[in-house]
Length: 270
Image (cartoon, rainbow, N blue to C red; front, side, top):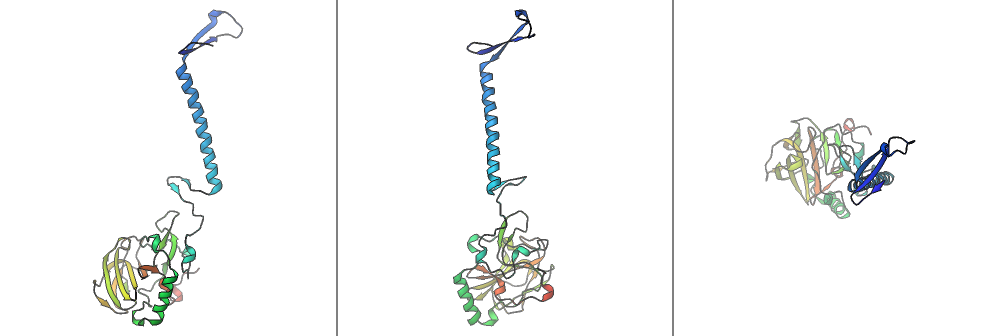
């Protein structure tokens, strides 16, 4: 090989046994081309090694990894955040998500119950007028989803907080008021779809979501057992059911604090 300022010159022999200059072929290659090829080769090898190293670290530590067609998905590994703060009389993890379900997406700041709410709850249960405590079923049906954290019913590997109960039913089934109070909302409300909200006093309210038809208006006074709406599948819903929710000081609490046990034939086997 010979070299000058701009090219590398290679002399190639047609035969290993001959020293005849007539059998030699001169090939000139640009130095810029050679240097660029060497740099590109080093970059390819380096990035390949780096990619293999990162993939190995992710697999060994359980950090988020790329999933086929799904971008970056956080690895849950069955752990539910804030689980110790929730009243799980019947675990949400046992739910069969082929049943009709849905409900609003609740901000993390409203998830669960705390000591202050529990104290006020006991006070209501012992001192409030029983006629204004929601202690009967607004609709009697199988419970498709309990209060608390659950897997996203619309697919994926994420968890979400479900601020109420999903009660199975057919479109047009009756929804009644479980206690006396005043209607403070009777309209469309985001993920709830058509929604009715009743104020029972003492900071206690109840919500009824995914309704097909509303039978009351804001300002109406209702009594226990009064027809207020009909079951549907409006809003964030996978099928006809009633989203039933109880709130204390605008924070969701488990409706089972007030409700009697449903009949045995409606309890799904664990």
